[in-house]
Image 1 (cartoon, rainbow, N blue to C red):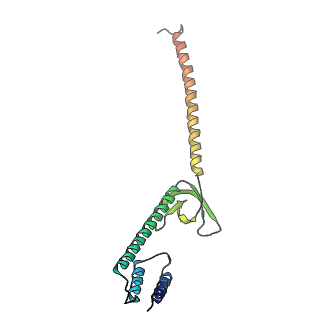
Image 2 (cartoon, rainbow, N blue to C red):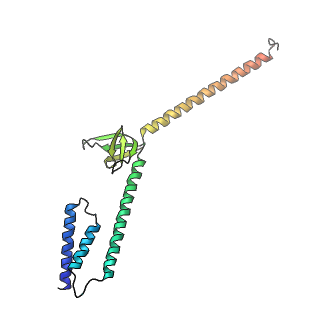
Image 3 (tube, one colour):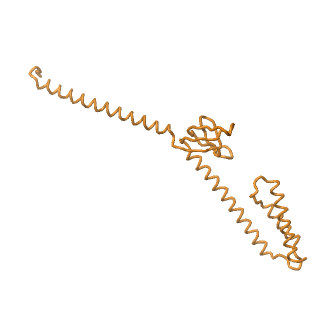
Length: 187
């Protein structure tokens, strides 16, 4: 068997295995150790007996596959952490989301909380949980700015009241001084 025929058979086998994997898996980019082992067994089965594949080549391929698996695990971990971070950053902000019941409508509201009880993080708006993927727009919460405005008005009102009390106290103090220094007080 010629080397080019062997490569053709290996390529055909790899394509067939990938097609099987695509048909049985939703995620086409997922590479499993079972798939790797099947490809390695196919390579062994169709190798040229006069020029067998060396052990070092198999070990090298296995090391590369292990590295690929670890990189995919790290990528998955990073994606998960990013989703958590994005979800947490939305708490207290005004968001507009696609209505899950009617894709032509939107729902707006302040994000009350972030939830991580399901596979995908969710946000809570008006007591109802929505997936993060529905978010269309994010803005600072009007509720927060309204609260700041109310607090500012309260502080200004307190300052005015304290100022009025200070003026009244000064007037009262002058009146007491005048009373004490008057001839009518015999103390």
